[in-house]
Image 1 (tube, rainbow, N blue to C red):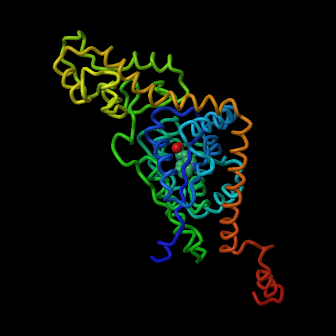
Image 2: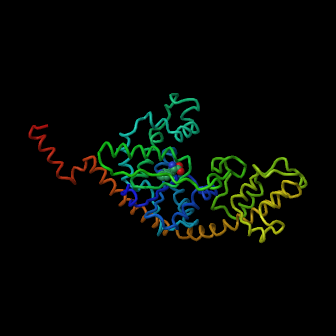
Image 3: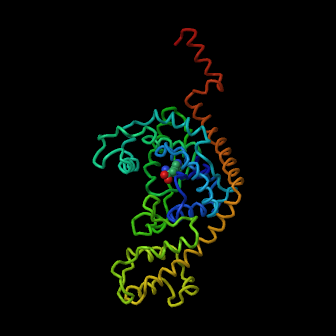
Length: 379
Ligand code: TRP
C-alpha cells in the first residue's frame, strides 16, 4: 500500500490518427486533457498518437494515417495542449511498444481476446464477423486488428501509466491491460509492471456529444461533425442545418427541447452571461427553453444564438490552429522530441521486462552461469 501511495502519477492517453478532431473529441477528451495538464497533479503526461493501431484497420492506406498525424497534432496544440507539460509522441517511433506487444501475446489466449466487447463490436461494424456469434466466419479477420488490445496494453504499461483518461468504450482495453500486468508480474515473479486505472469523464454532458443530425454520436463516418478546423462560415452553415424538433413547424407551435440538438448543444456549451450579450430576451437557458416549449420562439433565432456561443469557443482555437499550421517545422520538432523522450522512458521499462524474464543475455553476465552448468552437464 505504501509503495502505491508514493508511486508516480503518470498519465497516458491516445488517439488513432484517422481524421481531424471534432467537437465530440473536444467535449469528450481534449478539454479534460488540458485541465489535467494544468492541474499540476501528475508527474508525467503523455499523449500517444497511435498510428500503428490505426494501421490495424487501415493497413492499405498509410497515407491517410500520415496526413492525420499532423492534423491531430495541430488540433492538440490549438486547444491548449502544451508540449512543455505534455509529451506528444508517435507510436511507430517507439520500438519498445512492439517488443512488449510480442511478449504479451504469450500471456493472453485467443479466446480471451475474442471476448473483448469493443473489438467484437468493431468486428461486426467492419464486416469481419456477423452480429450473432463468436464462432462464425472470422476468416477475413486480420491478426493485427484482432490483437490490437494487446498492443494497447503495451502502450499503457510501457509508460507505467497509472491513469488513463478515456471514455467508457476503452474500459475493456484497460481490463485487458490489468490482466496482462498481473499475469506478467506473477509469471516472471517481479513487480515490474503497474496496473492502470481508467479516468472516466466527470459528468454526463462530457461523455458523448450527439451529432448535428441527432444521431447518438458525433462521428466522421456519419458525417455529422463540427471540426475544430472548420472555418466560421462552415460552422454557421452546419448549425443552420441542425436537427431540431420535426413537430415545430411554425414559430407559434409549441416545441420540444428534448432530442432537439440546438438545445442539447446549448446545454453543453452556453453560459448565463452569454444571454446578456447575445440574446437579452432571456436571462438563462431555462427561460429560453420555457418560451420554446410554449410556442413563439423560432428555430432560426435559437440557432443564431448557438452560432454566437460556438464562435466564442471555436474562434480562439481556430486562430491558434492557424498559427501552428504556419509553423509546421516546429510541430515536426515537437513530435520528434516527444517521441525521443518516450523512447527513453519505454526502453527503461523494456530493460526491466527483459531482466525479469532473464532474456537480457548480453547485459546480465550471471546468465552465463546457467550456460556454464549446462555446458558442464549439470542440466
Ligand atoms: N484505442 C484508442 C482509441 O481508439 C486509442 C489508443 C491507442 C489509446 N493507445 C492507447 C487510448 C492507449 C488510451 C491509451 O481511441
